[in-house]
Amino acid sequence: ATFRARGLHTQANAAPFSIVFDIDGVLIKGKRVIPQTRRALELLHENNIPYIFLTNGGGVRESEKADQLSKKLGIQVNPDHLIVSHSPMRALVPKYRESNVMVVGGAGNSCKDVAEYYGFNQVFTPNELHQADPSVCPTSTCTEEPAPLDKSVLEKVKKPVDAVMVFHDSEDWGRDLQVCLDALVSQGGSLGTIKKPEELHTKQSVPIYFSNPDVVWSNEYPVPRFGQGSFKMCLEKVYQHLTGQELEYTSYGKPLKTTYKYAEALLDKIAPLQAGPDGQPSKRTVYAVGDNPYADIAGANGYGWNSVLVKTGVYMPKGLENHHVHPATAVVEHVEDAVRWIIAKEQ
Ligand code: G3P
Ligand code: MG
Image 1 (cartoon, protein in one colour):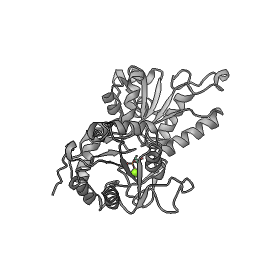
Image 2: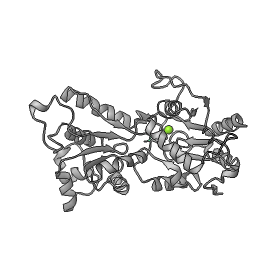
Image 3: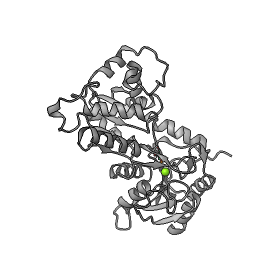
Image 4: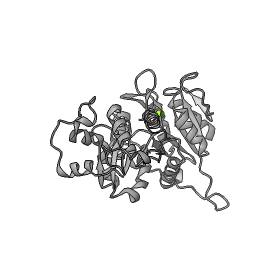
């Protein structure tokens, strides 16, 4: 039976703590729903526990991601209770509203739709650049049928780039590494140019923003897959080799504090803190459930939240990246055990 979530929790009987769920590797693995997810969600509603979803995934509007998740999980996911990797990047709109922004990642031009929905008014994609001039990346084929681009797009791809924003995992690393590098070493953002020799030692020509630091993530494949963090590492290495300079960038997503601040503001909205006996708002208690020690656990720990690590995703005892240690409040088998552990702890 489809499970009807209660939506906004009535503050009167809401549990005095909240749970923040990571998605990939905790609730789902690619197209597959993790078996214990359904019972975990039932426990949340039976105990009236306020919760939100906080993912380093994205590439689509929050409403679209919520629809995708609703269909997979069999519940009605409220898009206002879901944060994707680029959600906090809305904060960049005032600065870049009319700037010429190259938005990278996602399928085709999907991230262009998201960026324009947020309020960026001059957006183009590597896909459109490639359509306008296939020689920009001879080793890739255009994902769209080669059709003449309309005049407004041609103007954007010819205008100097003011900023590069990577909104999601690239679907064509060769092409996207190439066009990001082109922007970074260009004269004032003009693609197809190189800085003058006497300027090459100066820093990159355009700022670059990344939405998700995950080096790996967990889908239905038996072992973790490259994430946007691996793409960034490749770009950093090529940029450093070609210019002798370190790439400067701004990162969003877990474990960055900006992301947790954004999530806390959402929790304040859906589960306002009740005043304690002294009349002061009580301290917020949050449990973050995740599969990636370097994103979910490090991020929660760094923000003073409890962290619960599941073994259904990136984390494998003695697995990759195990040389970094991020001690979780608890380590459990899967998301149902995580919810049961939290309920028992709060009883
Ligand atoms: O691209 C998605 C991936 O990096 C991880 O997503 O839900 O595990 O934060 P999630
Ligand atoms: Mg995950």
